[in-house]
Amino acid sequence: MAGSMKGIVAYRKKQEQDAREKAEIAIKELQLIGKAINFNSVAKQSGVSKSFLYGDEEVKECIEQLREKSVNQEMNRRAKYDKTAKSQAVIIEAKEKRIAKLEEENKKLKIEVEHLRGLLYSINK
Image (cartoon, rainbow, N blue to C red; front, side, top):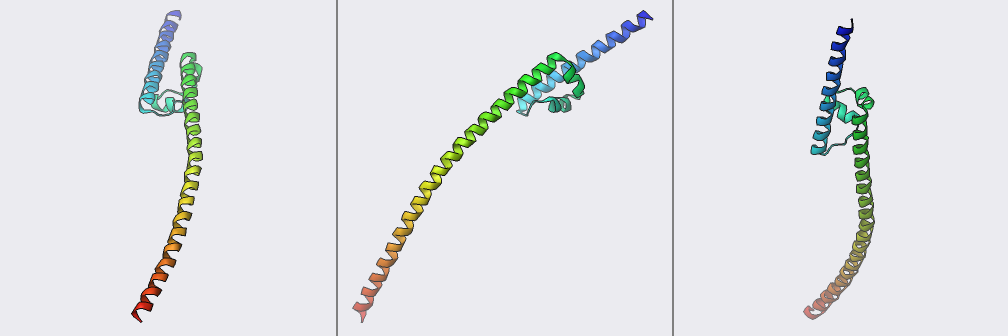
């Protein structure tokens, strides 16, 4: 009985090692293609169950660290977007001023054209 247990234990250890290797390869692939690294994406990419990923401390820590890193990158990206939103407001304000200036210039030119047409009409009469 003890001999058969050794084989089962050895097989189980080999399965765990294979699953760990698959998970590590999946993590590297996800990093290369720039996708989000979390338990769900690693499980889908590697074909390993999420319960294994949560249960294996080494893999779990790796995923959590990389997930935290990607969350921090996303927060930095959003902060950059917020800065650009503020600069967009400044740009819009400057464009609105320019539009107002051009509309005023357009109005003056229309008045000048009317005046010149009047002069032309009085000369031709």
